[in-house]
Length: 150
Length: 336
Image 1 (tube, one colour):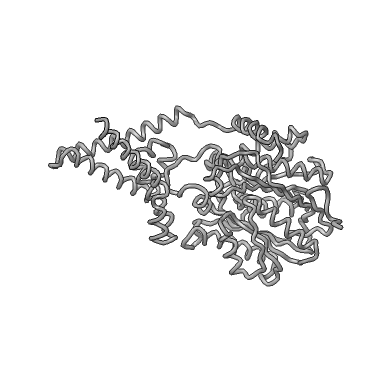
Image 2: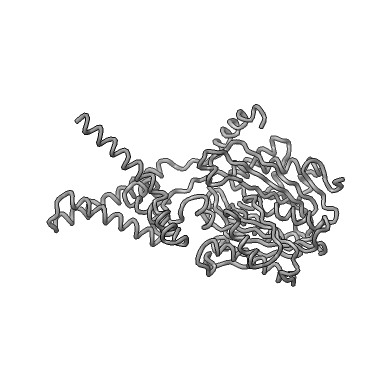
């Protein structure tokens, strides 16, 4: 590699950047807002219905709603609908817990051909694993800090 | 002495081998594209009756080789060598097809440059007098490539606008010492070129300098002018890579505007079929060449073309380790 290759590379990268089409930020935000908002509103509606009809505590209802949303996310993934929503909605369908369900079910479905142990079970968390590791990890750190500085 | 060597990286095939037949099989999406009528078989289901995507891709390879043999009224046993490859680890689709076909096999990996890499070596083998009939085959499959290089199919992620759509398809060609053409007359072997692009979703930009390097070298080695060619067609640069390659060639003093095309831009209607920057995968150039271009050459609508397939030699491991994308392009001249 020649001595001025790094400079050449930088110049080329800058040139390429001028060629890369940028997706519309406003359109992306609107899609994310409305789809994400719809999922959250749906969760709230389910919450209110359960709370008004059954004798569960507020916290219990929260857990039940979470379970139902995870189920819906998994079902829509299995039916091949969630990826179509995700294509438009981006973070709007990625961030809510339905997106978490999608990230587990999608690889689980795909790696069925490699068997239930080293395929489905091992690959299931290939996308969600990092979220779990750093999510649980950081909550432990926050918990310790809370205990010390309370 | 290497009497057939020309310049730095080119060989001239003094007894030009003839491509006596080709066959193509493509997936449903490719069958809805603008080149549909040039393909021999369009699948309704890209599982092709198999129980895994990889086996489906292997069947694509096997069946396209058989179809090319049928058209030439030859058998597997008439083939002295098979040159071919695909995009997957350990060339699973092509190796498994070779197991069934029982033709002596050279498995090649050049990422999406596979078609010309295989054709070059096949042509040299024949011109060198080592064989009379060989078969060349190349395949890719959208679902196997996504699985190996990107995300699971059903995950709800957004594809960047620079990304390309891996073609599901296999193209095979029978190359022979005798025949009425089209003939492979020159082959330029590319060097690995890396301009430091790390974005694996923008492979067109990574590969464009490799294509430019090989085209330029080919023209220097052979003394041809760009307008000696009816068509100079790259493998899968896509919209962005194509534009960059055209501009880089312009800067080098070559005007390709009239003759330059890209297989990745021909195979899909990129707006209607929503493939963002265009088609990619080694099956892309394989089916565009074996289908569309081969017919144009046999009808003499095209008399002399340069096929320059371009490959991004990254791996899932190299991407995760933050390495840039080494790229390669091989060129062959085909005359009717």
